[in-house]
Image (cartoon, rainbow, N blue to C red):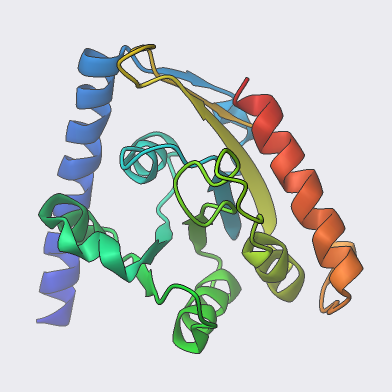
Length: 201
């Protein structure tokens, strides 16, 4: 029965991913850059700038890798996002506290060679709001040794309809694996965000 459920979910994911891709192409004239930078195997941490609710499904539809998104629990109040969370096995995160369960699940997935995705800003338009960038990506990178693929998203708004997502070259922080040095984490976080900002120009 579990194999049957798993098979059904894979079919649903395939259909939803295809439908999202077509929707982005037709509605937003989607352009994808740098897809060759996404490794075809091994654990990856995808991270991008966060502007709107379409950002998570955009990465899911274009990256050509299965991934689990770390998503704040409040998103599950939106039926569409809750459905996507179920289909793509999102990892719910409690805001403003250290969610040990989400951390353990994410590290386990990376250890098994899977991919996760999250937004360092922690909230939509976090940089514009002056929010401090979260060091979650850096933490997962040094704990797991997984490569980080930065994503820059621009457009997809009323003012600028055309939507573009650009994938940057993988960032490797395996030399810092296991480090708990705050300065190291801060430097990694800054480098990742600098890459994201450059890609989103």
